[in-house]
Image (tube, rainbow, N blue to C red; front, side, top):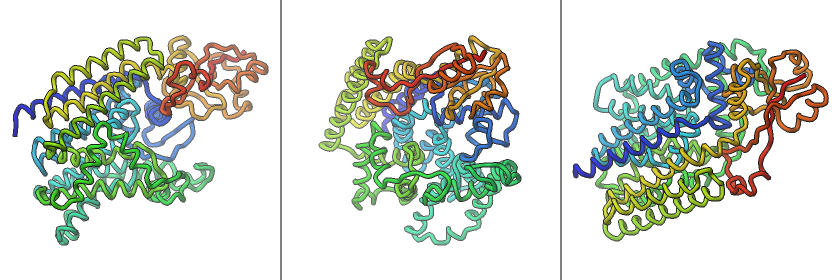
Amino acid sequence: MNLKDITLYKILIALMVFVSVLALFGGVMEPDSALYASIAKNMVLRNDWINIYVRGADWLDKPHLTFWLAAASFKIFGITAFAYKLPSFLFGLLGAWYLYKLAKDIYNEKTGLISALIFLSSLHILISTFDVRAEVYITTFTLAAIYHYYKAHYHSFWHIVAGSFFAACAIMIKGIFVLIPVFGGFIIYWLLTKQFKQLVKPKWWLAIVLIFIFIIPELYTLYVQFDLHPEKVVFGKTGVSGLKFFFWDSQFGRFFNNGPIKGKGDVSFFLHTTLWAFLPWSILFYSAVVNLFKKKNRVTLPAESVIIWTSAAITFLLFSLSKFQLPHYILIILPQFAIITALYLQKLEGKSLNVFFTIQNVLAVLIFVILSAVAIFFGFTNNYVAIAVLVILLMVSFLIFKGLKTENLLARSVMISVGLMIFLSLFFYPSALKYESGMEAGNWLKENYPEARASVLMYPDAYSFDFYAQGEPKYFWSYELLDEFKEDKNLVVYTPESELAKLKKDYGAEVLKSFEYYHITKLSPKFINAKTRPQLLEHFYLVKLH
């Protein structure tokens, strides 16, 4: 093992972490991030950690742990975007550490470091530092559970306890389906290696019991909020059980598309999602997977490798067959993808190394050219500074990491992610988030009308306004509801352009400020082009009633 290479990988990991920190100082994005942040904010404002409210009404969709973690951060650091993003970022680093530990124990330290580096620099992990949802938490908790259960094969009872605790945490983030990537790989490994006795060993059944003990806080909160109150209207009907939704509708209901929340499945969805989500490593990863189908490439690997492959495979298959699919689901198995890619990378030599060196070089140039084009067409204030930074990074990576070597291939690929992270943190998102009108309106209102009673009229998805406005905004779904509060001199209404004429005519509304809106998590060429952007923009207003 080359100490120089190990040092290089550690430096690259540190660099990746450093540039990722920049994302913590940006805004919270709509819809999911802002929704989750506003839920956690309401928990703190109401001092109620049991009931989940959205728009002032009971909300049943995700389990509580995501919101508990964010709310705890708000208690410590205040209700800010930084405080919302920080726990997810720290747990992402914990996930990288567990990935390093798992790969190191099964293979060696070099594989562990390369795996962690690939994971931290993959595109969807980078995006998740800006657009913070629940998936980074799930990824870390499932990976930690796999690691501790792997150690439980050979070590003490406490690894069973730790594994079950993290598995329970994953369940309290997403639901019981997370047990599939946790246990699926082990079960198939035991069957393939004829370790049938493992299936009946008391420690594994104890693990299941412990998981159900550890999820009692989630079960209790669901029971208190919903099962004790069948009169509550949820999903448009009464008599909804929170426990039934947690164990069935939110998981099997989505998979079979017969629950209250439905989607449209496409078997190939995650094949092309992985292609962009795992950049700049996706081409190497797909090649690594093909390579594993050849028996001669598997015989030198430890038998425990089966746990990694099959955990990823069955989860990927499950996602692909599901009728409810979202791109960020793939994050859960990116650690396994990273290990598979790391193993393949280390075997590259001669012609194959040269081929992938060329591919990654072309990819680097192509991505930096695309980002430069985005800078020009979007019209950043400092667009030429952004381009200069990209050019300098590209030149530095080509000048420093010269020679046909695996570590240079790795380093140049990581520099793609470093450049992308700097571009997004310092240039792109600060400019794009100006079109998140809820955030802009909430911040403007706090600065200019700190005593205002924030409210929303005839618009259901003002999640960023919920988060950034002072207090917990009141939602008006009709003008009859608005009439009950129109005498409130501190009332300020956030509303879409469609309601402005009526507000002016019937309520003598005074426009305090107008804001432009675009759904920035659904980017399009027309939005990126400053000339065509106005065609896509919606308009929202803050108004006072007279």
